[in-house]
Length: 47
Length: 194
Image (tube, rainbow over the protein chains, first blue to last red):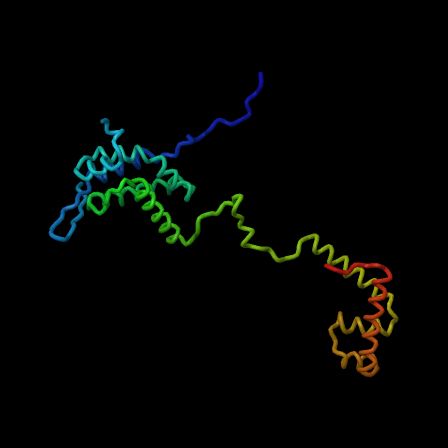
């Protein structure tokens, strides 16, 4: 039987960020708020 | 229509209206292309994750402050933010992205090595060797003047002082030395080019 000399792919060909990165973005989004007072925007991150 | 089938514009509107889930769908839909774009410029997974994260923090800020105008170009907009962050990163580190050679672009078109090649050095050595051999065939008085002038870099005044002849005689000997050299080159059919 013929041998297969090609190496097994170590990494997925699809480039994706880490799950923790996505989680951090979503958490930041949930915590981030903007309050508009007149012409001013106040940004705050709720804990 | 399921959320994952909605166009980007609708998801952006939903997110701006307070639907946090819409952002999750947008990230899921475009993460591969955005992350792939960043990785193509940085080649470092950890750094890519940092830039990816910073890109979406900017996206979130812009969307929540309503400074983004939806024109059906969500992905190009995010990619542009990522690109600007990559440029900032390189500026901060004062280094340029690595350039790979392609069929249409070669770095060696812009950078040239002017030092002689091994072949060039061998030709030069050969020419010098041939010339020395020819000089040896010249009459002694002519050879003496030519060697002093060309190899020792003496002036004709210095040559005349050292050989005890007048400057005009030294000049004449040099002239005859060159004429005889030419004749020897022609006679021996030697090519003295580098």
